[in-house]
Amino acid sequence: MRRPSTRRAPPAASRIRPDASGLMGILAQPLVGAGAALILFLGSAVGLIALLGDPAAGYPEVRATIAGPPPQGWRAAVNAGRAAGPELALPDYRLTRSPEPPPLSTATDALAAPGAFTGGALPPAPISGVSRKTAEGILPVIGPGGLTPAKAYARPFKASGRPRVAIVIGGLGLDPELTRQAIESLPPQVTLAFSPYAPNLQDWINRARERGHEILLEVPMEPEDYPENDPGPYTLRARAQPAETVRKLEWILGRTTGYFGITNRMGERFVKSPEGMSALNGALRSRGLAFVDTGIAAGSGGGDFRVSGDQVLDRILSPAAIDEALLTVEAAALQKGQGLGITQAYPLTLRQVASWASQIESRGYQLAPASALARIR
Image (cartoon, rainbow, N blue to C red; front, side):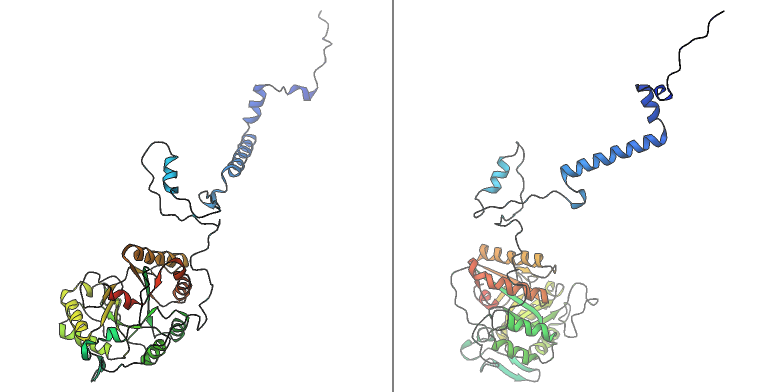
């Protein structure tokens, strides 16, 4: 008969052996496996954020501060440091001296105070010899010796030899406060354009000329989406008879006096009409008026005083976008000797243009009235 074994059973804790099969058994349990996977995921995410940055913050951005002016040839140097391959088409980034460069026009956060820009008052209108009373009002005419309203009412200008930049602010006269701000806060070289539908129109033009601003009169013209977008009852229509175009134009011209020319208000469809543009240009030529358009009528011909805008400044109403548009005007001036920007009067555009104008001369340009650009066409 066999004797009973005297070996004792191991303690309960020692029965769980720390071998591979035991570990796999534990992980095979659903709750334990899910918890381990969660811990592994969170640990990996923390590591990636520490290494690469917060993914919600967008692409990584590197800024460098340089002590001097932007180095020459930086664009070529970037490409030279790359492996062989096609050259990078690098945008025209501007290196600056500060890690957070302010926008171009943040030299001031408010409109310039009245009187900040000085300039002699222009002669009061009407000027003798370049207008005639008619049933439509006082209409411009070419005076004795060939003196035209375009010359008589333009702001005097003396070229300095620098590239010329000009700004036209439109839509004035309808909002009294914006109109007052434009007249008083902008330099006299800035050309102001008034709506023919504005009340007290002659009073506003008189005040603007007293501050040295030359004047354009806005002429509403048929846009592409007319009549959904209707510039008013005296809109020049693309398919109108020439006599009707001239009749409406004379009503607009007779609303006031003291302007050296006109500018378009809308008009994308009208300027594509050969008959409409022929009637308009003929009437302007016979009256000695300038035509300054927003850029939509470039190459359409016209009289002796004719210029098209290079950039509309307010396509996007943000400080950065307006600053970029003003830089485009400067680029046009560097390329061809003159650049013209056109915008409607908004609080933001008045503020941006006033600040930009306060810096422009120090950067090597000459601020000019729009009439000065038409003269060298």
